[in-house]
Image (cartoon, rainbow, N blue to C red; front, side, top):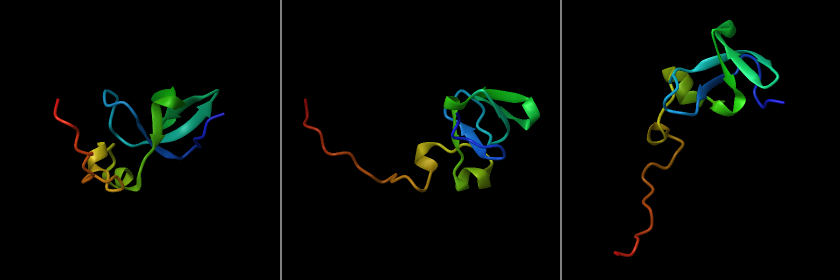
Length: 80
């Protein structure tokens, strides 16, 4: 059973896939289809689109997502 639903807007997880926001048109046996079947994939290849991605109609990189703390600095590592 998929955690997604018909009409939900999603983006592909991988950068080598298209970066457009897709709208789910059907889900059959874990196979998710978009645009009335013109594109499809397995559910693990997508995630829900954020509100900013929906507004921009494209997947945003992690640093572009405002909900992420892009100014977080990692702890200083010892010099080796």
